[in-house]
Length: 212
Image (tube, rainbow, N blue to C red; front, top):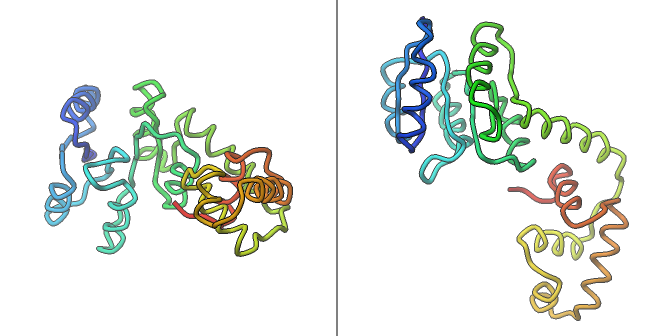
């Protein structure tokens, strides 16, 4: 029998997942609603699979993964999330989670992911997550062809754009005219090969110009 630990701060989610998996006699389910419950549980035993929401109170799955690694606790982790932003999916894949299922996918994707991870010992990405992963791979391949490195001023503008600032706001902060900022933005897009600011943010993240 495989021991699954479900961590989510929404009881309706943990109860729903528990009921979904209860029909499978191969699984023993343990539920936690706060990361401290998980940490206490891990002092006694180690589950075969940890299933967690990406966001838990003031923590994220990445915080919990960092804690587990600090304690040298090795557990396959399946993350399910409402987030499909490329940078979140990339950070999760970089953290080498065992699987990612988005809440845009069908509920049976959870069961499929668990079986793939525990029975086949493979990573699993739900259709929506896989689409994002493949787009990241494509972007990574494309960004390797980009030789442009932002100047200190250009990097400053990229950082501000990543924070959602407009040209007017950036101009005010840098004590420059809006026309100057608009020109610099266009030059950054041209040099980086980005088609728009959203595309620039993807490139900037993958190239390491910005961090999340």
